Image (cartoon, rainbow, N blue to C red; front, side, top):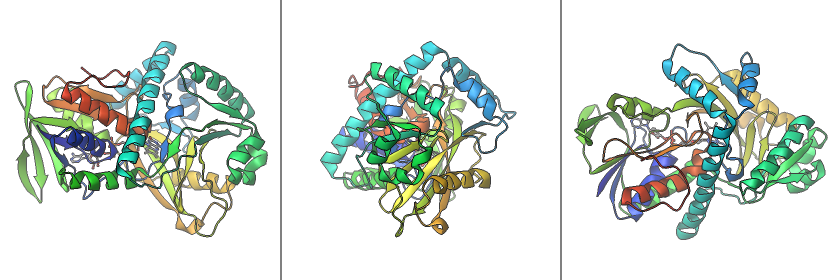
Length: 416
Ligand SMILES: Cc1cc2nc3c(=O)[nH]c(=O)nc-3n(C[C@H](O)[C@H](O)[C@H](O)COP(=O)(O)OP(=O)(O)OC[C@H]3O[C@@H](n4cnc5c(N)ncnc54)[C@H](O)[C@@H]3O)c2cc1C
């Protein structure tokens, strides 16, 4: 079958990979000149299975209210005259109900666990390299009361089959010696040894190369403008390439345009409550410095992650619900690096910092939208929010199963 995968981020490229494994004739279409140049470009790098619980939880609304006025808040809701933002926000409130939180946590955890297995298998099969480290994730706390709540949550997550080890400050330093630089601030930590990290952009680029060697085609610099329907099918996709309008036709289509998916789906009445949650990252060259962590860390108080990628340190975080604007806000950029060098003064070369921002394709529940649509040959794989890198391989493998008519090997609610 000829399949057009719309989008060449980590989700689109992994989709193309697994579809090609099934023998399909696959073409990936993207407006950028290469793979992973939008949200998959410079994310936090964590394969964060053990922290897959959603943002939407009973405590979230109060926290968000408290953060409303702070420009450097970890999660910032900037109210706009945009019905899409309000629809998303209202559904988010529904997802904060305890029963929804429980359901969403199980969904996200199942998919993330499965996805890590798929990634590990793919790594063994292909030998793909992407600055990966299998040294776990240590979430550390600087506020004692937050730590106490973290210990409680670790107990709950154990009931869902997710092992989180509670650590004293000294044990945290033993796991990650760089924490000695801020030992007196650390109240404790939660360690998940099976979590991993790696560079999503390097991974996606290398996988696209391997896929191309196996016959997948890539149409870069191609802007997708619309999906044209005929009855209950997609007939073709209208694109612009080199200033010329073209039609691309296939037997099946996979929507993997991240935060931009709703723009193409809404006109053909396919619901997709995906709204961008803008995040920032800073990439710092380590140079001769000795104080950069190698175990991937999450600073719970600031909701930022620090991940070692070869000779670089990636620091990422913050979320701003403020439309599709990708300009860099200096306050939010500086908040990231100020906190990094406050905790780890010897982390890297201060003058080398590269800031970046990306739009997480967030659903109110945090669970991505994967599976069939009302059109018999249109499938979606989008809305991965905070965990698109973590969930990419499993989502793509699951979708390939759905397209092939097989039952996916994961207990996840695929769209039907
Ligand atoms: C600051 C930050 C930190 C993060 N940290 C982590 C982390 O540590 N771990 C984790 O698991 N996840 C993390 N994420 C989330 C993760 O990066 C995303 O979920 C993931 O990259 C989404 O991938 P995607 O392929 O769906 O979207 P994208 O990578 O955005 O891909 C969509 C593609 O569609 C293309 N496109 C869009 N519209 C059009 C059009 N009209 N025509 C043609 N092409 C189009 C774009 O060019 C793009 O290449 C983070 C995100 C951010 C912003």
